Length: 311
Ligand code: NVA
Image (cartoon, rainbow, N blue to C red):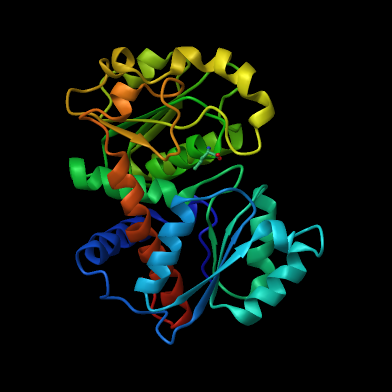
């Protein structure tokens, strides 16, 4: 049984295959119908969402399936009943479970007990669907991913920082993440990304200085300084993160052809200036669209294993 719980659940070959399929499905949206029936996919949210709900709902429909959107505030997973009990129930109703939740361990329990493929639609630790969409976007703008330099500035301890490390390393990229003291990536994630990078010819590093991190980069990414669930820390974070704000001055240190990524929602004047977000280097709307194409490819890949077709 395949799951997509974190970026390194895809080998480099599998990631390439999924991205190739995403390119194909972007050009021919109805060419894969693995959910025709329609089969139901449970899509459950314990945190706010816009892009993720919209892109999974439309993507599941294009794959021939039906998205069963479940409001986590009603389901109260882990409060009214345990994650394993919810997993057993959803696995009897749906062909797949897509879940946005808090700790990664909840998602792992869902995968262990549901009996169907499970997709990470964001946890506190990882956001692999977003990074897959970002890799698709970079392929469109720069061609080959291997050897390109990807810099992430901001909260290097958050889900996006971790997923860029693992997903970028899998693609053979040189990934630099940068953030203030106290917001370094989880050492275990950094170590695992190093292991992956050694095999793919990429590299990963935490670089404290944002200018050094961005220097010569082919892509510069950032994310909100206040991830969902961290709202009480907003003021302290705004002060600590100010030197990592992606404005035109910081971007001027990147390569002349560099593109700018942001998973959205964006806070202009905080982690990114309006001039950069709305400027000519920004590819954020392509990224938002590419969520659908990348996630369709992942879902098709997960369902391949059920039908015995492996790649
Ligand atoms: N790091 C952000 C990503 C939002 C898509 C968060 O977790 O809120």
